[in-house]
Image 1: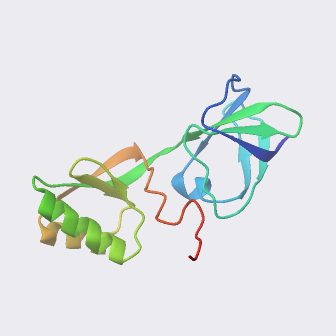
Image 2: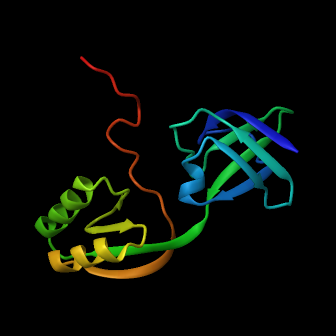
Length: 147
């Protein structure tokens, strides 16, 4: 069994000894019990509140390196042709604290029929796709400090 207590970031100069493929929800957790792609049991014991990144390397207690990959999952993919409509959609989703992945006049959210209907009413075209979901980390992801 591999036990992980250390994060190395996405720029690691070591080859991965093992790979774990995680959904967005799994990457959001600090404590996990997993199986690597080669069938090894992996236990993760990391600080809570700091999601794992796709492409991040972790170091096991025995000195091996584990790479995190994103699992392909169903997402709602919404697009539009103009920036004003796109900005309104992002505002309304943000106002509801929805996790959102943002691109050039496209966005992705976890499937939710109420939110998808709202996006259609705002003028976006919504479809479902199988993709790795990598939402924005949020305004306070690097620590929140009062000044």
